[in-house]
Image (cartoon, rainbow, N blue to C red; front, side, top):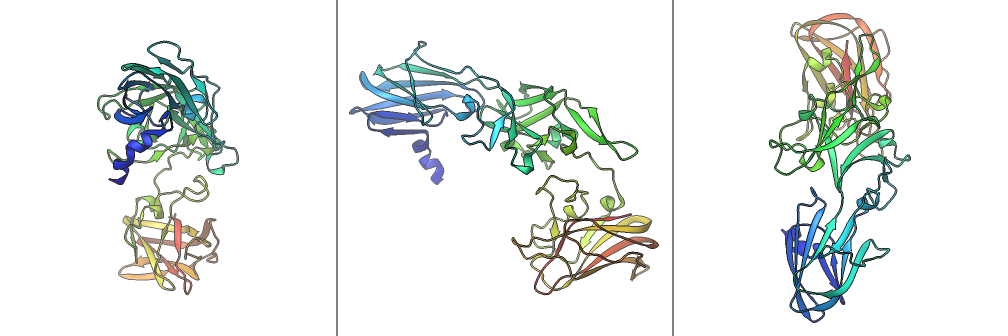
Length: 394
C-alpha cells in the first residue's frame, strides 16, 4: 500500500521550472510549475507497447521544460552498467515529437531528453520506442551466464516455461540463426506479448549416452513476471547458446522412480532434490538444489528409497552438500547403505570404502542385493548438520 500511495512521485517529479517524466504508465497527474497547475495525461500500453502519448494541459500558455527519461534499453544497453549486453548490433530508431513535428529536444548526460517551449493546452508529445526481441548476453566474467543467452523485448525479460515447451526447458539451445518474433495468444493473459522462437535445437542423449542436437519445434517464451501463474513447471531465463551448456532430459532411473522418505525435513524443505538427477557436475554453477537435515545437528539421520517391486542393486553414488562459510551443514562423520530384507534393515557388503568428499559424486560398489527398499544412513558431525545434492542407486 505504501508503494501504491507513493507511485505518483516515482512517475513524475518537479524541480524548479522543470517537470520530469520518469516512468511510462497510463496515468494522470497535476503538478505546479511556472506559478500554475499543469495537468499531464499519459496514454500508453507500456511495457507491451513503446508508443506513448503525453498530453499537456497548462491552465494558460506557459514556458517550462519537460524532461523525458530515455530508457537505456532504447539506446542499446539492457542495463546502465556492463553487467549484460545485447548480442546484436541493432540500432532502434526511436523518436519524440510535439504535435507531430520536430521539437528541438536536447539530450543530457543523465539520460533525459528535455523539451523547452511555450506550452499550449492540449499539446501532445508523441514518443515511439521500438520494441523488438533482443538477445542478451552476460559479461564474460559472470560464470553462471557464460555461453548462455536470455531474451528481452523492450524493458521486459522473458523466460521459457515447461508448460509451453514440452514440459522441459534446460535442454534448449538457441543459436544466432534462430528466428524470434512477437506473438499474441488469446489464451494467455490479454495484451501480453509472447516470443515465438523458430530454428532452435534441443539437446538429447543418444543410446550410447552421448549428447547430440535435434531440431526443436516452435518454442515460446513468456514475460518472466508471468511464470508460475498457471501450474508448476520448470523455468529458465538463461538457455544455452553453446550446446556444451545444455542439459538434456535424463532418462528415468531406479532412484528417480522411487518413493522417497526421510527421518526429518523442516517446513518448506523439498525432497525433490534427492532424486531429481541434478548434481554439481551436470547443472550450471550455483543452480543445483539440495536437501539437508538442518537444524538437526550431531544426530543419526536417514533417507529411504522404496521401489514398487523388488530390484537388484549393486552400486550407489552420493553427492554431499556442504555450505561452509554460509550455513551449518558439513560433510557427515560417516555413512552407510542398508537394504530391507523382510522387516529388517541389513548393511550391504561394501566392496569400496565409504569415502566422503565435497561436491564430487562418491561411488561405492557392494555385493548385489535384491530388495524393495534401500536406506542411506548418515551420522551428522557433532554441532553440525548435513545434506545431499543427489543420491543414486544402480
